[in-house]
Length: 146
Image 1 (cartoon, rainbow, N blue to C red):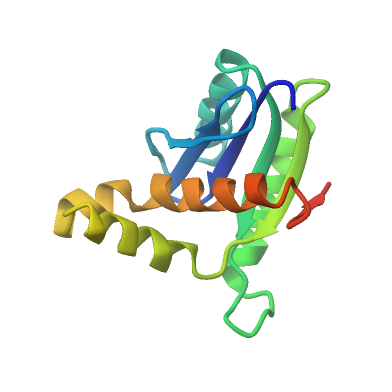
Image 2 (tube, helix red, strand yellow; image 1 turned 90 degrees about the vertical axis):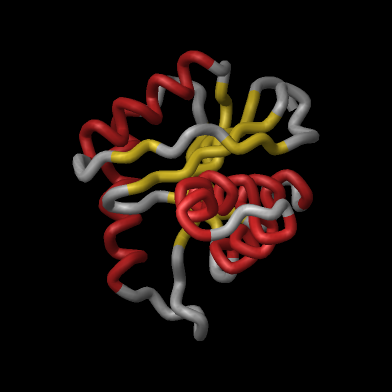
């Protein structure tokens, strides 16, 4: 794989990001984008894409436990539609089921000894890392290209 993969755990107020190494082997959490503005979130995301030679972006889809689409999924579709129009040429966009990633992220943070406010500040970027790790482990087969 040439170039990095960026994972996104999109939220209306906080958006977690994680990035792979250039070979697509490791997943590293990045800072969370904290803004209530879709445009500012996209601006921050585009900055990360440009600055890190990102070739693929995978966005987590927060399906309900039974697999149906709830209100949060509709919000993510709006985000996907907006980002798709602004991605640089050659960057591929995917979405992937992210059910249970926040729970797994909280578990990882607890295992690392982080709880309370310290954990809350990191949960979105660690959830993005979980999304990315699944994407990399499955060589993208767990995601749907847009």
